[in-house]
Length: 321
Image 1 (cartoon, rainbow, N blue to C red):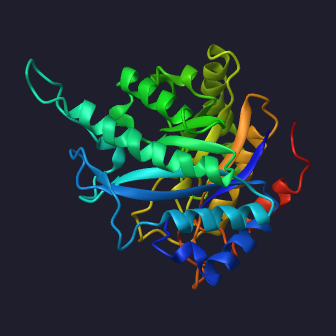
Image 2: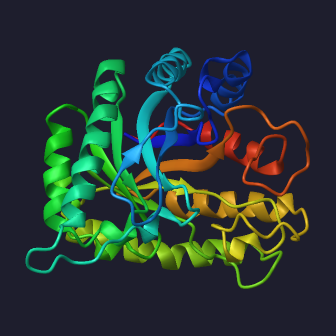
Image 3: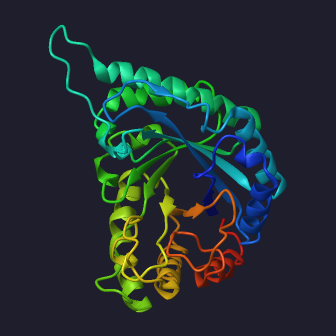
């Protein structure tokens, strides 16, 4: 299996996946020539220290929305990885979710949170099973929770009780060696927002060289895990000058539009990673629920930009075995 994919629908809201505008966006994405989509959506907890995860029925995509999106993606020839995510309503990054360690007699906040989180995952794992999703992602960038190995192993076991397909977890770049429970999963996943530039307008050749250095650590991890393959569950770069220095950035709106830097980021990653047999592929970040109205913009979207043609060129290559 080699994943030529994109992440779709993270900006979706209740009912959006079933609109004609969403169908047009999915169709444009399918025309890239890929074979997989990570269908990503979020459910909220009140704050980084809240133990309760719950939908906001004004905004959260419904089960019916998810099923409709999966069915449409299947009709376009894509396999689907279902990727439910948790976000915090206080705006704190999900990686900061944390609780005090229980003292004797204290309330075990970790136990309470994982009880809620595993129920959240199992709900969507059942949907993944019923709709024929070919992969399920058990978490995204939950860095503050990753040290809780026993809780994670119990959660993964519960998910396997309702979902028969392969499982992946999505850590963050640079954190891959800190997860001690990769053996419980089928794939190693990471948000591969690695720095590949030292200056704005970095050359393609220098970006490729930077990727070659980053990938050696991932290769070594795969080897230590007996050849378990690595997936870039998220990877991308905005079309803005300097963003290859910090591909994860979404906040600096003052950066100048630069589709060449974005295209070079894509091209350099493809060149470095495509032929690695321990590497299972890409879910680029991200493809909007609806096609963008205005161009150019300095966001992650590649629609109408040079990077879109880069993806088409690489995804037109025969699938790796």
